[in-house]
Image (cartoon, rainbow, N blue to C red; front, side, top):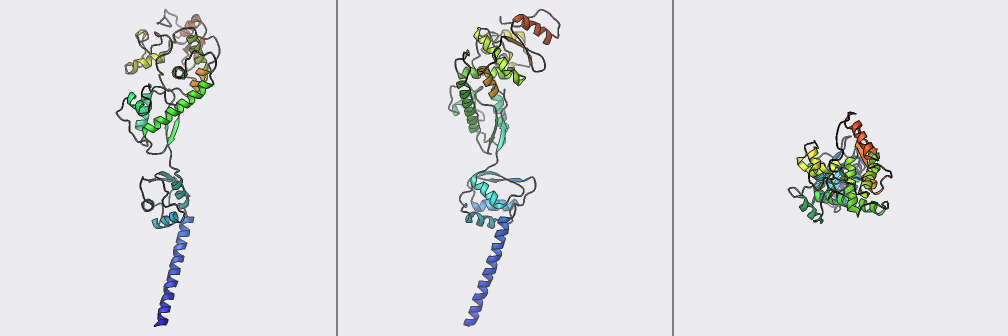
Length: 346
């Protein structure tokens, strides 16, 4: 009886050893192998509150791993069972289970992109954010003043306050947090540029620089002309001349603008009508990029006080009204001289 018991125990030990060895071989093959994903890769999501078992089960159901239990063992052996972070993770062709686990522990989540274009208005920015499926939308239905209050800037006008750039963010970032990043970027850029501005500018502070930069942004078709256009506006301000720039009038018209700027629009009383008012309009008219801000604070020297579009995106600059009128005839009136007034406000 004792001999039979010893044989049974030996058999059990041998079976356990064989089973353990087989499991060890399976585990080693698992951690040394690659995830089952095509050449295009895949994206897996770890939702907030998911347990290690839930994550492993999800990976198995999606066909990325062959055995959820082996992933669980790997995580526990690495001491990472409680350290997996929520988010989206990219699985690339040739990646192994340990590399995916490391991403999940380090929080290397997929970054989505949204580009805020130079010259956009605040409304255009909000529209682009609303269309993004990757942001968590919390500001729907709120007016501009309510949104600025949420940002802690209740008494600020939103136009021009956000820096145009391509922003990368994880899925689930709120639209409010997105705006905070863009606001912070603009504030930092404007502060740095203002600190290194050219002497003698007719600007009382960074906000006036932002206003003028937004006008330069909207007037510029050729990027290289920004400093020269800024120089024209700076010289006009120094001389007490009206800026007389169409983009401010268009902004003031708002939804009433139908694509055709008429003479009556240039004569209308409007705080943004720089054909009627002296100095700058009350707020920016768009989001200027970094180059426009730099141009306004480092304008090109010269004598030009006027410019007219050539029709190819560039401008003809003139130092006198006579030269400017001749340029208008050439580029705007196709060489056909007839009575006209370049500046109906004067």
